Structure formats: C-alpha cells, structure tokens
Image (cartoon, rainbow, N blue to C red; front, side, top):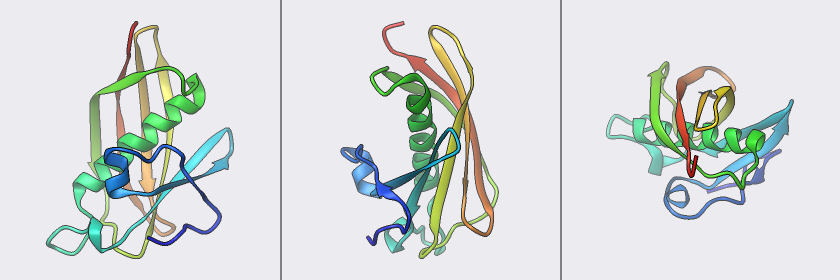
Length: 134
C-alpha cells in the first residue's frame, strides 16, 4: 500500500486493523480525519469495495474519534453499529472518515460518523459503545 499524501500513519494498526489497513490520520478542526488507501484487496467480486471493509473502517473511525475526545486510556467496545451504504467506493480512491460523540453517559457512548471520498459520500453510521468497567 502506498502512503496517503498529507496524512500520517495511525499508531494503532495491530490485529484485525492490520489486515485491511494501514490507516492514516491528520488533524482537522477539533478532531481528526482518518484515511484508508483502497486497493484491489478491498474489493468484492463485483469490483467495488466490500461492505465489510466499509463497516470495519467506519467502526474504527468512530472508535478512534470517541477516544480522541474521552482519552485513549478509556476502554470501550461497540455494542451496536447501524449503517447506510450511500455509494460505492473503488480501488485507487482514498476513503476518508470522521466521527463524533453525540451523547455520553457513565456507561455508554452514542456516536456517529461518515465515510467519504473527495467526490462523494460513501456511508453514514451511528452506534452505541459500552464503557468497559462502568
């Protein structure tokens, strides 16, 4: 995979994330925009990016956005993730993602995010994350 111009490689790229990444990020506004350079390994048999890749990247983007706000020492896990596929992404494109917290309680976090390319919206997602140990 090639580097994504203007982004730095994310430091959390072990486990499953290493299989579809590497992921990249750069500061934007009060948070970060994250990126994934799409290649042939991300495609489904129809020649567009597999929905599982989009869902996995959306979960990662929102998870990291939550940590950007709460602190990355807090542990939490996805318990619900809703998504709307809006358009297809293709090999050669850079998939971008942003996330934000909508509401936070002591034990759960409600958050949302979006995936997009420089030309179109790809996915909208929202969900609930359980604060572990709460």
